Length: 131
Image (cartoon, rainbow, N blue to C red):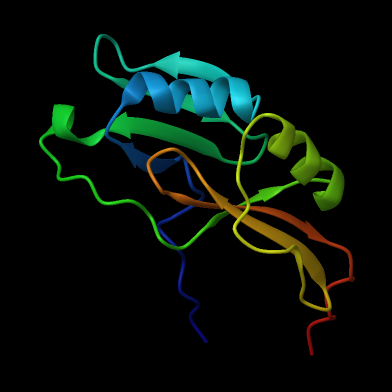
């Protein structure tokens, strides 16, 4: 029986739109503490490293794209959601709701300065074995 082979072998980065590149860079680099690995030349865009996914912050209008924030969160892995939340709150980040315990993970939702949805996430339950 033939098997399908995927053309896609991974994800290089996800793009996060912004209206103000300098403000967004400050948020991702200083507030979240992510390393800026590269700038896109003289364009208002840069890449920030999470350890498993690169977040490319891009000022939409400079690339001829209309701005619209992401409404579904990027789940940022942390070891302790409560401690990470407290640290981000001390840096001015607002969390609109209590931390959620889904029964398998803890999640704390927030947004960047442009309203892009983000979440602190930690899975504490083991994944169910495949059948």
